[in-house]
Image 1 (tube, helix red, strand yellow):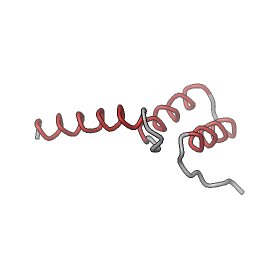
Image 2 (cartoon, rainbow, N blue to C red):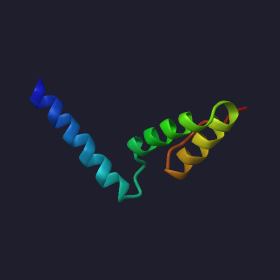
Image 3 (cartoon, one colour):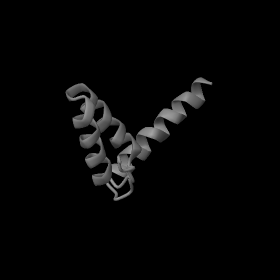
Length: 65
């Protein structure tokens, strides 16, 4: 299992590094955005900031009605 865990970490890190340089939406980047926004804001401000950054990163984000 240690080899599989190490390989999984390597694949995720490699995929993140490659996606940063492409126009493909990068889920790792979005995770970093969410964590940063959680640290800085809360409530509606948090939702709007994450929604804006998710769309900017190429992800579809549901509208709040």
